[in-house]
Amino acid sequence: MIRIGTETTVGELAVEHPLATRVFARHGIDFCCGGGEPLGAVCVRRSLDIAALLAEIERELAPAGGSGAARRWDQAPLPDLIDHLLATYHRPLDEELPRLAQMARKVHEVHGSKDPALFAELLAVYLGLKAELDQHMMKEEQILFPMIRAGQGAMAMGPIAVMEQEHVDAGSALARLRELTGGYAVPEEACNTWRALWHGLEALERDLHEHIHLENNVLFPRALAG
Image (tube, rainbow, N blue to C red; front, top):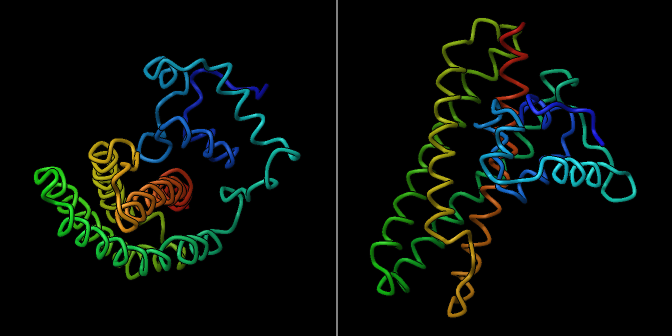
């Protein structure tokens, strides 16, 4: 078993064992904005067996059972981590956010009469999240990331505090989208666009959790520490 105490936080485990985030995602454990919560407390609150959870993480980390060790971004140069965030998350979102917006509008237009309140709120929550993320990434790319690249991360407490609050807001929007979609369970009557929207939103949630985790739990603390 992994040597870890019940007071070890979810974020610490995600940093030290990146592939553990796959297990957290399966069980709906927030390892980004909620990364400061002790693992023991999370398991109690969610009625999870901590020994079973750690065994599942161990299986995920085993070389024969996965795709190999993930890179330890807490040990990589900060410019490399920023490049990874841009290439793996920011640039794909440039394409994915408008694609999901188009599908959300289409599904609302075609199927909104089935449950007007639900589809109207889903569209509004998603478009609000998209607008927030568009502005958020622009501020990171134009202000925060250049400061960190220039070795001025220790002076970026203000911008980082803003980014962290926006991460909390994004996490709340993701949680509401999951609630509205019933955990992204695709209804039998769903058309192809509806199905693609549900799958796309679920993938967005998964990627944003990884994205926010790397910023909140790795990039920001290291940048502030100088």
